Image 1 (cartoon, helix red, strand yellow):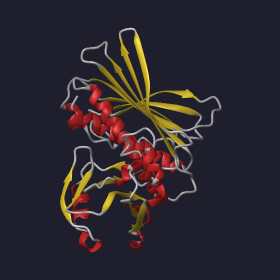
Image 2 (cartoon, rainbow, N blue to C red):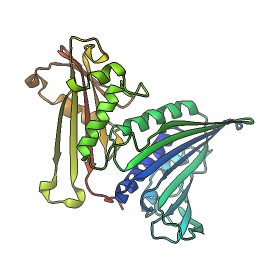
Image 3 (cartoon, one colour):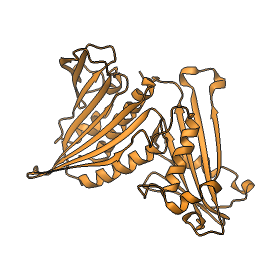
Image 4 (cartoon, helix red, strand yellow):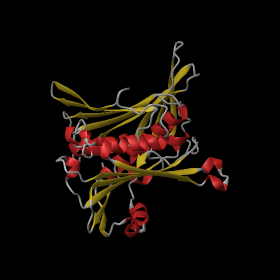
Length: 341
């Protein structure tokens, strides 16, 4: 399958899971399962994304307009299996969505027999699909790990992320927990959104851009010398509550110290991480225009070069800097949900 189609569908399913969790306003778990069956040629690749947020209205799935991309890949049937239930529902509903059909067509969504909850009080949604993957499955797994790690920077206080991989080779079954958030690693409910963003950026930096599984010991010792700046703006003055957009920015600076540490290594570049509605931004051109339009010389910095990396990051290169390191994160999101239902 076209890797752009797989990643596009993967991102879209996670996006809606996040919004359902946000709407629940309670602690939710968002679980991603990747399964590779090497007994087929090409390998059979399965993706399952589930959450314990509010039940789905199904409209979000019916709005998926990727039939052109799906029809360009004849080896996939375009079927998406959906399971969902609301907190007050007595049944768990099952559906099959045919992404080869036009959105909202009568043949696109088929209702399957429901399952009784037998008095259970829970809600959630699961969507999964399986494909014959001719491209490199391992490359997708690495991309997925990097994608989820980026979302951890936002430290959404009511979502715990999990990413697992299962591989079947002959009689051998291997399971791995690639990412597992627990109650100790997620932000407290008492923190505001921008405080969560600040918390996540510090963790990102102290783990060297998540290259480390835990905070660098040298950098953690210098935590008190970190300089932070943050700001918030919104379009609430337009009195359009349903469409209210909020923008949050956090800048983290590590000044050079006389003590040797990872932070004291002078870096002429800055990473800018951009998010929209709790998801990493794919098309970064508009974000690049924003950060390069800033009068950096007013703040004592001279911008030498700027570029967009394949990893979904903007890199700013300075002509000269007296800072050891500077990281920036920008998050633009709709304040109220569900605006898309």
